Image 1 (cartoon, rainbow, N blue to C red):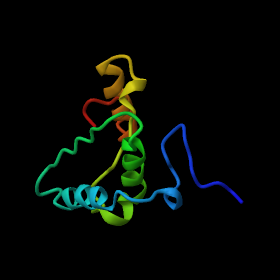
Image 2: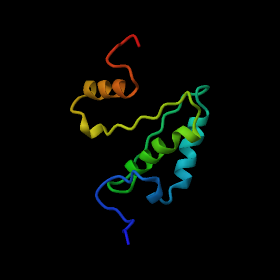
Image 3: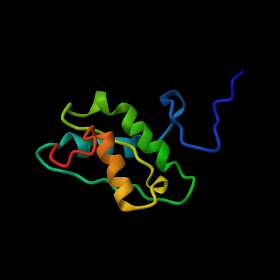
Length: 102
């Protein structure tokens, strides 16, 4: 039998994600108010508590739960050495391809 428990990284398969229903509902409720009211969500907590898994679930479930005008992007800020590198990655994720006027 395949062991569904995972240690060592974020859970990316929604079948193995359990719990955090209240947190998901809160994030999706904030996203549902877009574009009328822009929202910021800050996810904090101790190491290894499931922040990345939660955000990956938001990204996976967003197309079915949020308006089509909302784009969810997951970027791990620890992968980028400078703010400029992070912003360039964000632009690429949003399809801007380095064009500041896009």
